Length: 305
Image (cartoon, rainbow, N blue to C red; front, side, top):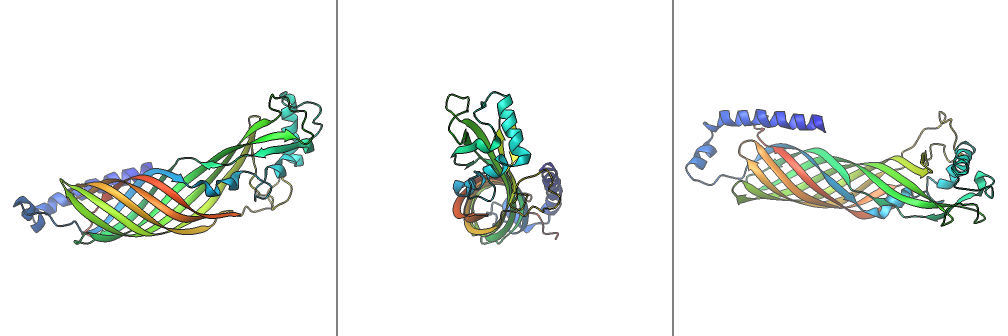
């Protein structure tokens, strides 16, 4: 992100210098000095954007560790490699008694729901505007989205848990990367005093890649991501290749931005984007809403291209 901001700053400075050099020769500049309204800026622009994203929770339970999921809590909890360590840690820390004699007596009493949390989104794009105010844009956005939740750990015989509620509260974390490719028709309207209103309407493709699926028990984290090809978890994973459990999706979107133009250089805009799109995770595929608040930096003096 730092490199992107440095690049944007350098392009703004170079564009401003070129704009000053052309100002004396520009008919539009002379018309503006004579009090004639400026035409809608046209031509090619590049932009960088950053913002906050809120994703629909309809696929978040992919990270809940339920038995029907691709990644399950019980697969790890009952494995020789990790289950014995979890059982021994719980016993040594005084959370379970001798009534729970092995890892196989540990079970999940309740699976909680997972929820996506506010995440960051950033990206780059290009656009082309016509003097009529219409145009088109193509943008690429990346966001890393975190899902959080919890489950209750108990025993198969209902005893041996040394807590007031007879269960141990454990955390869950999921993390995924989403790449969006948006193509839109745009309409820009001058509001006066260098202010403008922009409306975008378009189609979107997305790709989701699962990065992590973790459970936290007694202060220790364990990956439940199935890198064992459905077999019992082990320390040795060299013979298995992790296959991404995400996939492709599609949808539509609409954006609205208020911007402030810097004549001959570009614009700074702030706005809201709403996607209605399909998200694909193994066993969880659904249409949902994704909301994003964005700040965008545009550079539009590219006639030298």
